[in-house]
Length: 570
Image 1: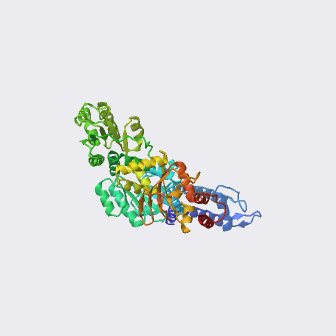
Image 2 (image 1 turned 135 degrees about the vertical axis):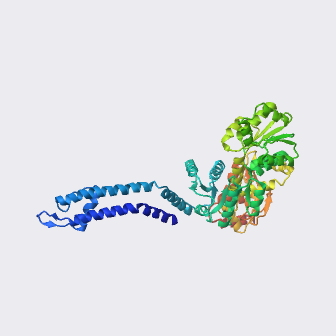
Image 3 (image 1 turned 90 degrees about the vertical axis):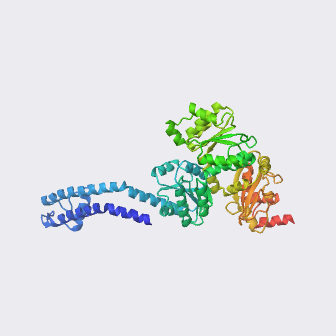
């Protein structure tokens, strides 16, 4: 309502003078016609009425031209009409020019966009998330969330980025607005206070901005899932002290993944399965054992150093700063005689692996290619800062690439779309590799090397038939739900990874005797066929009845299904 009033006020303020000019012009011309005497068709003197004068001026000023009414004009009247034509045309030109300028007025256009955006947000009934800023990372995240059917609202300061987003034509539609993301008003406009707003995501490089947004969001909606980026341990601790639970530190995430790959390759493989990376879980080759060289001792280099120390792996550093390197050499090329000497002195000939972890993708690439020239057998690991250059890194055949933007987007995607998988990963990191080896063998056996990961909650909207059955006072175990629709005597290719109940209690790798309750959240790995079967079983009364009894469900309300099943048991 406020923005509608703003639009009306802008129109009134801009068009006030043109309206006055037209009113005054009309008044003068009408008054002149009323006062100047004319002659009727009988030769008698007459004076035009105000209505006749207004009627004539209306079609004269609009250039329609119906002729002289009600009688033919005298020369005095025609002289006045000539004068009236010119002043009314000038008045209309002025009004039309002002109207054209109004249509192009940026403030009015902004208010119209805001009003349109506000109506969309008010009509949005589905759960949605707010993403702040539109860049490579958030674009990748929007693609992932859109594939899950999530509704998204985006705010960015730059109108060009908003225009770029709208050209992407995401489905479902992404609502976007230009504005200052650190102000409560724009966050309220984006729907942060609505009950169906489930999360706000702030992934800026500025820790100060992320902290400010987190605090404002927490005050505006205490039930909101706030996901913010942090780039240092100190900042992460600060955010935790403020009560922020979901903190994305890309360097910590990469360090954890790197450490896991070094000391627990089976757990690492399971993590890659959870993130649905395109890997062959029966052909995984672990990272080499031996000395590692890390080029770049910034936040990424330090995080990788911690991972190597945790895995008891020998390492050495080349304290290379990309900005200083380019300034000194006036080039981004790392590969001349001096650089060869630096790599050789660091022990690249004897090293088993080299990590290029600077902020410059081109320097990282040339470091790895230079190292490979010196030592063709060396294992190459590169940091890629942006998704733009992925084809270049792939063409260079780098053995392993850590893309910060992708790491961030995939973790946030899991937090929003599949939070149970994020919880499972936390539990995964507490286990040893022997546990991981056993679980990986089960996943291989039960999913035939092609697992799909999905999450389901036992509620009407996601498991209709199962929820009704449990609410009727019946019990159900996982083993029965894991049967195949093609043959209920056969177990489907499915494995249950973790279950969390309404009391927040978790069960890791539950067995088939585990009894499912209403509101339980279940994380599942299954083949595509087994996934389709499971979703159909928990939702479709026909399939659910078949799994229970081995019979086809005919007709009737679900309560009769329960009675029939109990009779069969007797």
